[in-house]
Each structure stands twice: as structure tokens, then as C-alpha cells.
Length: 66
Image 1: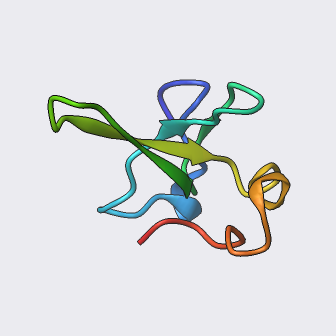
Image 2: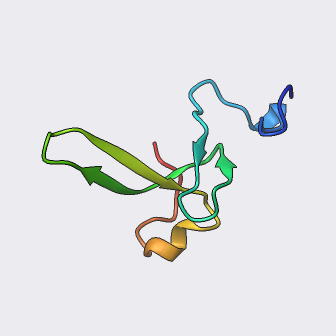
């Protein structure tokens, strides 16, 4: 672990990308996709939550994003 936001070595995976939780603002290594934001220009972005806050967005958001 080199940074305070890095997960413990046993929790790191090669494909894990840390994301900010849209509710609490913490960095999570197990992001749950809770929304997609679309714009008229066609560009968009994904909105993620941490596993603790994901249920606040509905029952369908209970597992980390693939």
C-alpha cells in the first residue's frame, strides 16, 4: 500500500479502477454503477456509489460494477 486510498494488497485486483462515491465522496475500489448521465452532445459519464451507499439509489444497485 503506497497511498492511503489504496486497498489492502489482498483486496487489489488487476482490473479495479477506484471511483468517487457520488453520495459520501469517498474513494471506493468496489464502485457500484448507479446512473448514466447523458448530454445533448452525445457525451456522457457514469455515476458511481460505494457499496454502503448504493442501496440508497434503489434495490437494483447492490453489487459492484462489472
